[in-house]
Length: 188
Image (cartoon, rainbow, N blue to C red; front, top):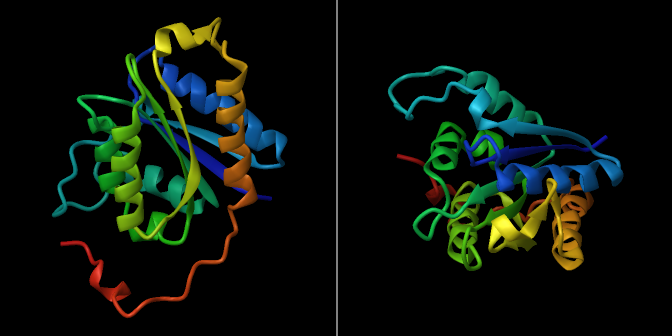
């Protein structure tokens, strides 16, 4: 069975990002996956200090990401990019968690489309040698996009659900063969 974890980059109690990720996870479950929402409010992930192993809950967090077949990353857009709390969580991860793994992206914005946040996340995932789905979900004007914790626009709901199904469909995609420069993407 395919396992999908979703990481919510929002710490808000009533998070539209978390609501949207739950919708994507429901669709992933309907497609036959076992799902898990990794709510960063539940993990003690101090700012990454690369000189210290296993800070706070980092070992438990990275284990759950590493053991998943696919990952959904959801973020609110802050200052044109993804959230700092998600950046820190990703900093605790590395190639062991993401290399060759299928990743789906979801961005939420209070205003216009969170495209730059999704572009920035895509770049980070590609640097980790993840396989990022071409399909992504962007939710603009989030406060009016939800009613009673559900998306009100059927097309937007379908887009988020498609994201959940696609991470299951492509969870076991075969990675491309290594290239001559593949050994150059090594962290500092």
